Length: 365
Image (tube, rainbow, N blue to C red; front, side, top):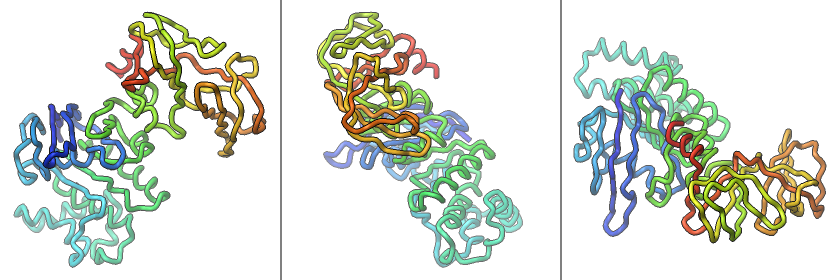
């Protein structure tokens, strides 16, 4: 297995810039997620790591060797595609064994390796069946088997569960993570599903419009988003944004919203002008004694919890509260926020304003 390092990698398609000077490191044995919406550059980044696309500029290192301009065949990696890409005229056994025969491996060794992989993936009983009649989940296992049978330095996966239904996708994501842990593999996985990324990944890169917005462990990215885009993309419902004009002095510990004062994490520098206060729905609480007021406009029942939407003078706020709490549409109530979980953003740039303590969390996880 191997460390993978991306340094200032850029990719242009004619006049279109798909990836803009990205840099990050994937440590040996990590399950690493490339996350973002369609068209953000995550698949292009993966394809450059794999050698299916060559970068316009920048360097790519796999196991300490610079491979940016080398073809995929010289990188010792395995790629799993979203649509399986199996050979329809071959049965399961031949699909899995094909890479080994292509490398000139002896028949006895091929038989042993295929049996080992089939046992790991639980597909021993279907080895002699044609792939055309298999379920989507079984075909995905065959595609994984063809990848892992070679013992490559790294596995690259481009939305491998995207074609599965929601229930089986959740089951397969748990199987994939368990397989990764068993093999100790370096795995790079592309997805647009933030829940999949949070559940499976050791580290996450969040991309938008070809730019790396944030890089870190899932808890860092959820608790301390670096930009408004990350705060909105990660979380369901996403982070609430309250827009206001004000001044926050250096080292300030409170902000003023209307008649209410809220404690906030200490800021690095004094800032003024258009600001945005970010608060997660689970950190917003109904408290009739609070000076900050909102009108209930909707309530969504979710079983043990409910999402209550309130209209305030600075924007709408969704609060995740216990389902037994009674609320009525049209009533006015107070809102409190957990101080240590709040994030202030510059409304113009969308960048988070960090405190020293929060920056320590970001740097060291």
